[in-house]
Image (cartoon, rainbow, N blue to C red):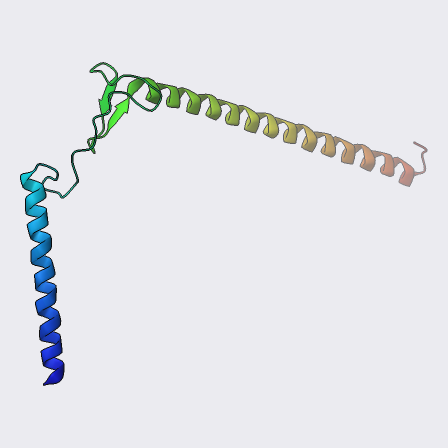
Length: 126
């Protein structure tokens, strides 16, 4: 019986806390500080991106999630990505070419070694 009374008291306390939270949320919704999803509103409006470009109609893109993106900064990010990618590809091609040259040189040296050893085997001097 004692356990039942303790669990009932805990449940009552939990219900009181939940009701208090609902009251706070209702008050914040009335003040316009939260919307339906519970996201806090009232953050200061920012007129420029972190690099100082103004958020204008021509310079602002909205993502599917509703975030603002500075078109100038996005273009710079894309340009840097392309340049880095171009450099990485160029380096990979150069390394691949160098590896091919090393392989061909190794094969040529092996053939030359085999050819010299074959002459020595037949009794000829190199």
